[in-house]
Length: 206
Ligand SMILES: N[C@@H](CCC(=O)N[C@@H](CS)C(=O)NCC(=O)O)C(=O)O
Picture 1: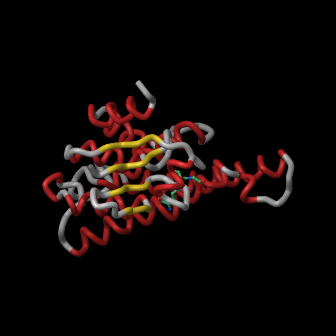
Picture 2: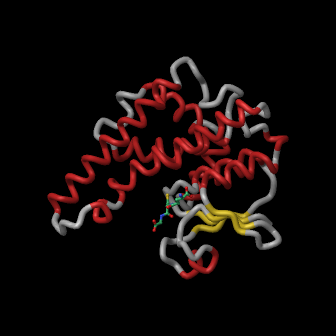
């Protein structure tokens, strides 16, 4: 069975939600960072890692999402077939990988962004991370003005991609999503979905 390796609270929530939206059989395996289980599957030690029946392994969240959307066109999660629609999907996938996700790194792992081994230096890095994330959420909030979902053709894997990062922002940004009402609305639209609730409960071990 196709298998997704995920960690609780990680960006792997995006393909986990996508697999549930698709509804085809799959297995999901909870892993810890640095564990032998994860390293045996993906020597880089990152999630999401997705393995097909024949052993083929795909990493990188954006690639996994695009693959799943293409593999299951019946689910209508690719965001459209036209070359501009595909380019828009690629654009927003890159936005989440390179701009939004990367903005969280200084918050998650400030020690990797300073050579000063003290609390004040790490705190300054975290604050810089908050500013980076705020900038990206401003862009997303403006884009979502009068839109239900990120892409023109309705709910897509790109919304799934946004979901873990929106949850991080709720938890980590001073003020949460107060300044980003359109992002909050997108979050609520996704969170209310029973398939999403099912995945969240599974990841939480309920
Ligand atoms: N560019 C990769 C990044 C994957 C990644 O770093 N995921 C995080 C969780 S959100 C992780 O596994 N971190 C483990 C680590 O950095 O040691 C992707 O988009 O899939």
